[in-house]
Image (cartoon, rainbow, N blue to C red; front, side, top):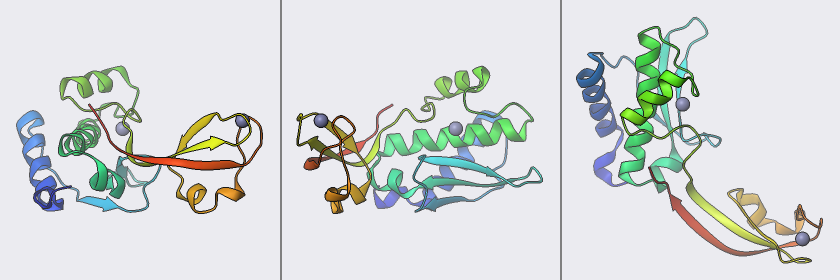
Length: 163
Ligand SMILES: [Zn+2]
Ligand SMILES: [Zn+2]
């Protein structure tokens, strides 16, 4: 992420987006989460049902293009807007998914962002891909799914996501 697209910028972008499209104010912080692995971003609500924060993963901010970062942010802002308006704000809800398209925001888990490693089964030469760093550091601890044979790391690739 370029230095211009820091948390401050994202907050300004988010405020403008909510104001312009939903006439809503942003009442939660936008934060980077280094431990967020399963998803690129998330909208967090308290147990008692109050908006708490929007998180973007460090992986997204480090590897995503600016366009992809803002797309994921719009996705989380739509969760926020739907929640505040009392609508069904869950991923997969047809109305929510329509709004994602309308605002050119990616559907959940459709983007590949980050550093991935290619490996090969020593036995049958079948290849696979993973973003689990430990496999690269200790490949001898792993076996291929195909033959339960040792694997070798054959390359790595950085994905920046696409919308
Ligand atoms: Zn979502
Ligand atoms: Zn194999």
